[in-house]
Image (cartoon, rainbow, N blue to C red):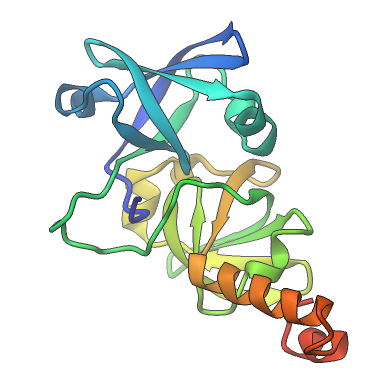
Amino acid sequence: MFTGIVERTGTVIATDSVAGGRRLRVDVGPVATESKHGDSICINGVCLTVTEINGNVVAFDVIRETLDKTTLGRKATGDRVNIERSLRVGDRFDGHFVQGHVDGTATVGRIQASTSEHVVWLAPQAHVMPFMIPKGSVAIDGVSLTIAAVDGDRFSVALIPTTLDRTTFGAMKAGDTVNIESDIIARAIVHHLAGMQRAGGISLEALQKAGFA
């Protein structure tokens, strides 16, 4: 479990083919000294298990399903990624519950950047959009954010200077693809209502009016 509060960014050192997927090697800086084999670390929103540590470089084995469902399969040497270690009992909780289980991806659309605000519009895959609730939480590449607005098949988030400085978002541009994990509570509600609809307990029209279908 994570909070979506990114500790630092790291750099992809290598990505090699292995049986069943790829081995991703990331320079995580000082995070490596406090990590051990088997630990969970969130890399761009994806929960991965430490398989090897060599100095500041940590290796992760990424299975085919994860490569297909997230952006990790597209990462190349030199790419920057967001890093967060798993939550410890008793830690301060500043973001929201992030599992590291990515729902899908989204394409970055219009970026409204000015001296007073930095708003990013994103178009997620169709199956992800029902979980995007106005003023709800969302994890984008592992960063805990609040959904500012929902408009049809897209949604927006507002980024503060600290987020731009401490994550990969400072280099974000239109056309980029990012990982999306919806809020666990919103996801549970949507699945429950969809199940009721399939069982005939609630009409499709009611779900549509509520923005869930």
